[in-house]
Image (cartoon, rainbow, N blue to C red):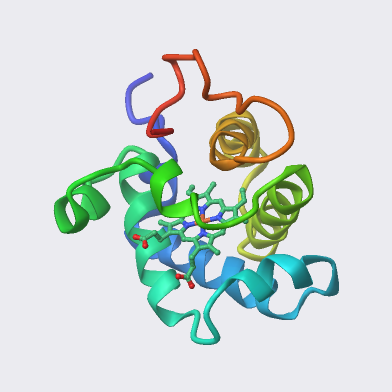
Length: 143
Ligand code: HEM
């Protein structure tokens, strides 16, 4: 224990989370395998870089920037207008995997994030089968 980092926020810091988020949307913007995911978003991704960085800062154990600005951490409601099935979920996760690689995330951090990232992405999914959030009170910020 001692000085060992405990949360992804402690490992990355706020700047690291912002770099990860920028890399995520830059990858989404250019990766052919994420074309459908990109097409769901507005042409200007800059506002999303801020929103996702704010969101992940709290989600990763840091200060609740998104909650402070928008009054909620619910991620199902803002995604309701979009068709999000397994394909869209997996494109999102692919961009995040590549962003973690590109920002040289440690294996420790990648291991720490793998399951929670899958869970939150699957909780945002609203098509093709029940969301993993349904009936699971352990999923943070699903709705
Ligand atoms: C699973 C697949 C996902 C898809 C297809 C998706 C798609 C989208 C789209 C199309 C928007 C609106 C963007 C715009 O206004 O231009 C959005 C907003 C947003 N997404 Fe996602 N998303 C996914 C997963 C996630 C996850 C897992 C998170 C958080 C960890 C997240 C965080 C956000 C945030 C913070 C916003 C902004 C909400 C607001 O308006 O305040 N998304 N997403």
